[in-house]
Length: 310
Image 1: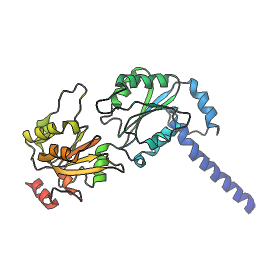
Image 2 (image 1 turned 60 degrees about the vertical axis):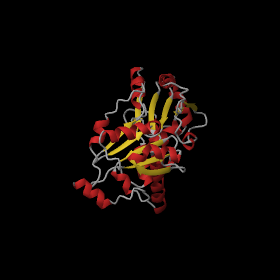
Image 3 (image 1 turned 90 degrees about the horizontal axis):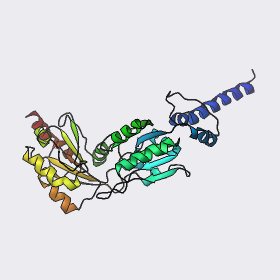
């Protein structure tokens, strides 16, 4: 074989490999249960419309905490492929703009005290769109399965016989702690993390405050807790947690307008009022907060370590 022929064969092999890499993930994103990659026609639009007659599928996708750069590669591919995008209020507009121009966009976002699209209606929308043979991406802030009602939507879809798959996202607890400069766990300080919702479906407080306050060697993270901050402060102190425990309030975590305010547990409610913090705002209570570079608690690592040993 001549040198020219050999180089031509190598180049053809490289081109095929590149094309396979480009198309294969998209074929898999369509919902093939086998998980294997198959090279299909390069006419993706024609293929997509032919598939309309088949049953649709819903993907419950985590958009992450707010910074669009924190979304997963898989989630971004699905957004770009979706026939229908059903999204929440806290999803970054940049991510919504990644969907196809001909995709159906449905805003089902909730705001404090204003829920224009009830949860049952959202579930109906997902079922109806998928029943028409469409690929539906339900884009939710953070992670779908951490206080995102992803479990409710998954069960509703399964009950309706609709195929559903979950794509996890970075949850607010991890993102807010990282972007504020403190860990959620530390071998010498905190050996556990507890994620707590401060908002219940029927507005009744079923939190086991005694269990949360009993062990100071963990980190407590409260989602949707701004309106309940006085209760959080009072109940934790009442049930035995040290009032001087460091705390952080993280507003608009991981975004360009993030604001982190540090205080101690006994000034938590007062700090929210003084700093005029607004939702979304995550509340973190635990000794790890003192590890933040800009902390105002003046607690040193050595002191925390000795407290752990005592």
